[in-house]
Length: 100
Image 1: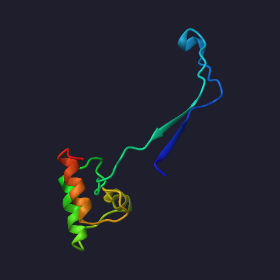
Image 2: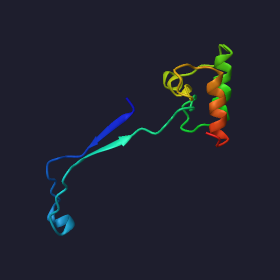
Image 3: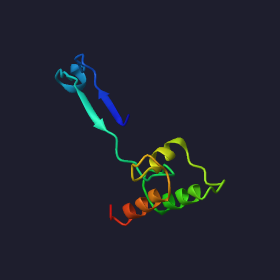
Image 4: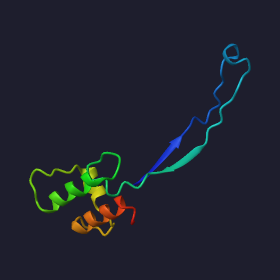
């Protein structure tokens, strides 16, 4: 779904007066954090680089040793057209070259 909700405690939290010198209250709120765009990170290393393009190229060429995890498959559709193919490899290379 690409979205995470981080929720802090809604109850007041009191710190001991001895530790802080005063009493403090922490009032919670909900913060929405969007997931970073991970498209192109085929090997799920946390960054997009040439190794992602090489792995995807091998996968598209049906190299049996080119194994991609489920998350990597999701990230492999770099051009967001719903298909995983060599066009995605080109998109990854363009992203690396800062052309995307």
